[in-house]
Image (tube, rainbow, N blue to C red; front, side):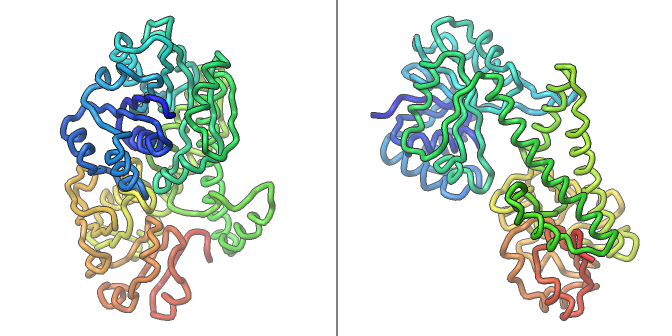
Amino acid sequence: MGSKIAIIGTGYVGLTTGACLAHLGHTVVCADVVQEKVDALNRGEVPILEAGLDDLVQEGLRSGQLTFVMGAENAVAEAEFVYLCVPTPQGEDGSADLSYIQQAAAQIAPHLLSEAVVINKSTVPVGSTRVVEKALGRSDVFVVSNPEFLREGSAVHDFLNPDRVVIGADDQGTAIRVAGLYLGLAAPLQVTDPASAETIKYASNAFLATKISFVNAIAAVCEAVGADVNDVVLGMGYDKRIGNAFLRPGPGWGGSCFPKDSHALVRIAEDAGYDFGLLKGVIDVNEDQFARVADKIERMAGGSVDGKVVAVWGLTFKARTDDLRDSPSLNIVGRLRQRGARIQAYDPSLEDASDPRLEGIEVTPDPYAATAGADVLAILTEWDEFKWLDFDKVGENMAQKRVVDGRNLVDRTGLVRRGFTYEGIGRS
């Protein structure tokens, strides 16, 4: 028999967590603060693009295992477990802002059952378990850390097929109770203290960001010495100590996690008296990569983009999501617009240009329209469909047949055969 669970926050993490826990047989009530969103979710309308999530939400609604309510206090009255899945945005000093966590904890405190377990699912700095305990002010409830390791675009798969489940708790019995929520998932279970669990999340994201920055730096070396980064990465990846995951060059890393988590870990280290110079360098390399790709596009356009049309394929921070947060593509587009470029862009996940982050960008209904009269085409997000487009038609549309492939996605040989001038990342 499943447990009664409350989820506070129906953002990317909260909605995925709630739908997946309901799928595992628990009774889940998800709370949000926007009435229109709650109403839409109760109709089965999912506001984010995430493979399989629509089906799980509709499955939970049909079975009665999943419901959505307005207000955190209305979700927790019968809950044995309460997941905090609220935002922890980056503050001006790089640290994570815990105000949403504290507000949520204070809001639910009077309504919690005795012996309830409050679970930090949001990515929070080391010591946040204590912060939540203080905000709750209840000696009869427990607080644990249970970080998420969900990749946008494959979050449902990642939840149901995790590499590991990490639980940080001071009390062994409470840890066992939380572990019971994940019965049926074939994954290693690590029980540790709260500080270690919180650090595991930050360390994991920082290491992945480091791998991407490293391969982008190697790509720059490859360009300088005439090597092909694709061959270099293939050779590296055969080494089992290295592996090939996250060794794919591109325009830089972004999204809702890596930027804020990397800056937060630098700040956590500083507050503890350690200068994390290595991670600062990783962040600097990423900023340099944005500039390098923008410079490539400008050179390909003839040395200046002022008054020229740049076609852009891909605006989201990665494929298979509609998330524009800290998108490398938008960072690069912003640099080009500052230099006077006119941007015509297409992204498969964006139906309109109403998002304020797209201001000044002409969002087109299809990829061919984006290339009309363009002086250069920049491919900045790795949507598979870009590989299979009619490049003869693309060439006919463009004023100049020039491509900067920021993802090394398309067939270089085929483009050159069609008369395109091509430049990728780390390829001579």
